Image (cartoon, rainbow, N blue to C red):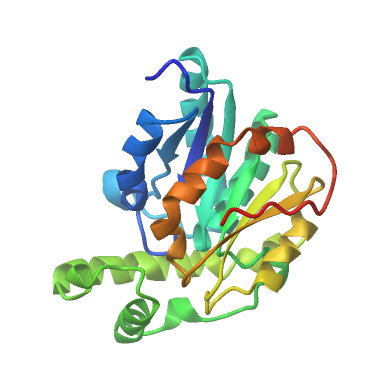
Length: 258
């Protein structure tokens, strides 16, 4: 591990995805900057494919918090003393829920949480997406364009991804239970200009979920544009402004990275 790393960012995937969505960016963080990227795997998929899936939100948040705690203790022995989270869409809410468990259970507060394209719990509406047919979920995945067609056109792989999406949608149906969630860390929000699922006005409502302040990063593109603008995200994670953000209680200061 490079000696100049002083922060680990735990990255939570969007609904239906695994930690692999962040693998292409890990080398960038390893080679440049002070923030180390650590993809978070969801039980039942990817490297944890043999583990049973967890569809209870509270149980999942606690299980992931235990995993992060163990990993961060190891990182501390390697010289990394600060941690933060990143989460896109479904992963944004889940990541913040996990930080709440981390603080409650272990007394650990992140430097910040970066939340991308994610409707805050206070704005979440009840839905039944987890009850949709496989065909309907597969069509939604095609329309959202967040999964490669090479995967969706391969029946065996498509079935696996549909099952993962259904599991995450079941967890997401419980997000309204977090409507009163308020964390201690500042939130860095990522808004895409043409996101059909999340408006900037909705993103701003994350202010209800932190006692600290929020900042905004804007990128061009659709719901999954953040993955095409990872250099912007890398810059924000590495920026000293991010560290200063964690050390102030000023509210409503908006940072824009073009």
